[in-house]
Length: 366
Image 1 (tube, rainbow, N blue to C red):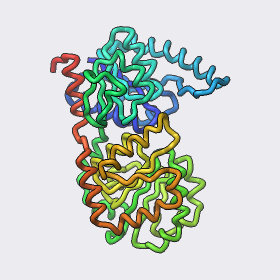
Image 2 (image 1 turned 90 degrees about the vertical axis):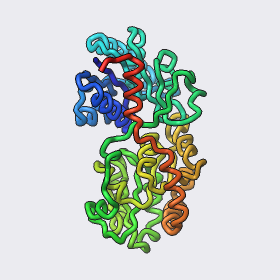
Image 3 (image 1 turned 135 degrees about the vertical axis):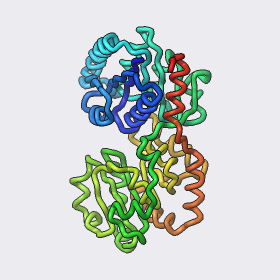
Image 4 (image 1 turned 180 degrees about the horizontal axis):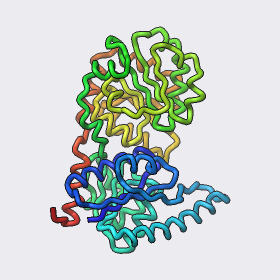
């Protein structure tokens, strides 16, 4: 059994892809896997670290306006189609799985043209352009939200949730143990602010604006993930020097940080939301306005409409975020309600469900 998995560009695509591969490998130990990603993106580091082979395509997304850069991107896309053709013909997969992102477009298109069954996993509540284009020829489409029949054929859709990293699913650290591991006083409240691997300027600026509140509440520790893009800029701010603020560019051990936290502030990427539902901590979501089709707002609304998270608009966050954090810290009833409703939205067995359905769809003998 040969399994081709393609897509990436962000952790929101890559980590579900790895989780699906792990679940398939557990059920088909003799299967051979090959990932196809975008050269220079996060998958080129994370996939080999997870023990899988990956090939990178020289590809990137199109800009909506016509320019020299658009022409160059089109040339890269054509070359990527030829490269994908070579990869698929050489590997001869029994199935091709697309998780969204630039690389999944040419790879799954070629696989489909060669008669190879294709499977799609859509993480967001608002389907991405690539997946919408590939859906017509897909055998199955796995989704994480209700109402996805407005994008895909209803009889192909299986609601399975988004696959989550095993270290988060299987984390059994108590909050006290997690605080000790992070050198945080056990009597402190802990607030996690995370803006993704690159960071979120709005969340970072909110911390600077809320400096005085953070300073006055010295029994609250802030774990502030500023992102690789912003580390040099924000580590020099006075709020970063406060003893109750821990500034980091990136968090490797998310499981421990999640366990230590009382409140989490996050962008509304699909993977983040799925992980937060597993963790079940009271959450404030600040959707990024800089994503295609504003899909993070759609993701966040799917929670806030069910009183499972608080939604703050990006344009309002800088002035009110830290105040809202302390309002929530001081409202035990609200925190409990948010936590209970968020946990109801968790899909802890998503990867296993997807693996089982793929195996059944292909009639694979085990």
